[in-house]
Picture 1 (cartoon, one colour):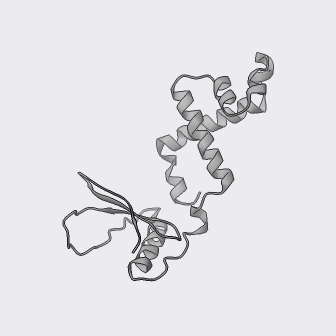
Picture 2 (cartoon, helix red, strand yellow):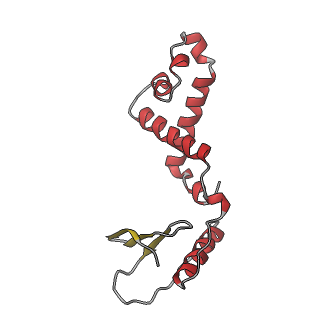
Picture 3 (cartoon, one colour):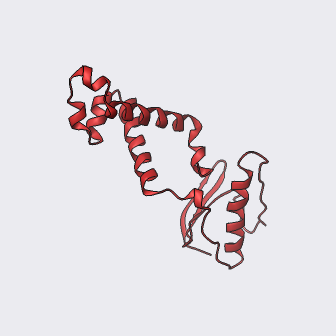
Length: 151
């Protein structure tokens, strides 16, 4: 199979991350009893196709074949990864009570953050920070699932 990258047992079952050169596999195993046969329960929800794609990759790997790369939509581009990092920073600072100017300074927009109030109010940097905070707040409130759907 692959190296075990994580293995945690909690009240809801066992969470396992298995290494794979094509992209790791993340499993939630409800029964922690050893030597139990595995079965898969897949909800018929709007993420059904994503779940099936993950399951097929894992099944190929389980039977000794190359799992193949994850679907293209699952991989984050460098731009998307950087934007998500900025969203996390902006959200953390916003929740801690920092101003949009403080957030802008932290994210490298110190020149814009130093503008007089009238110019700052209409600046691109302020609009960008507001969008980052709004996007991060939406993700915090459940929108993060879009990442799993490749959106």
